[in-house]
Image 1 (cartoon, helix red, strand yellow):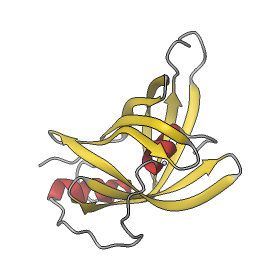
Image 2 (cartoon, helix red, strand yellow; image 1 turned 30 degrees about the horizontal axis):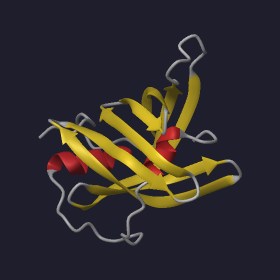
Image 3 (cartoon, helix red, strand yellow; image 1 turned 120 degrees about the horizontal axis):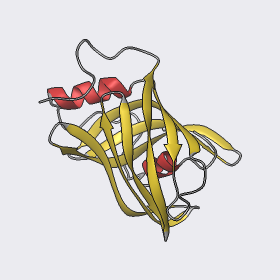
Image 4 (spheres, rainbow, N blue to C red; image 1 turned 135 degrees about the horizontal axis):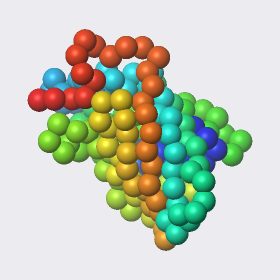
Length: 164
């Protein structure tokens, strides 16, 4: 979940709370949560982002690689993502809050700090079938992000959008 300085990579990397990598899910997943987890396995978000106040500028491409997304506990999920930022190119397990708007999962990051990158990161990114869309903000700079979800492996039979 990457282009250099990817916004979703930053958003997903923000809340690396103290849950060990590879920790078993503390809560059982509902059928909708399991479908979402399955749909994020080996997924790549390919799209664009905008910056507020730069409406006349061309869209900026973004790419986010997600190896997996697993429920940790309550609303916290561990996303194993590839982060490319400057000279850094690595896979990391990161923990973020995921909430549900009816049957639609949404990363819900609020004014978080990223060690080494600063504070004031926010993002609301929803996943709907083969699409994602949302808003992002870092300090006084923000914008929109949107695109398609490409999967290297097929999700289970049925719609990849969680419905429960």
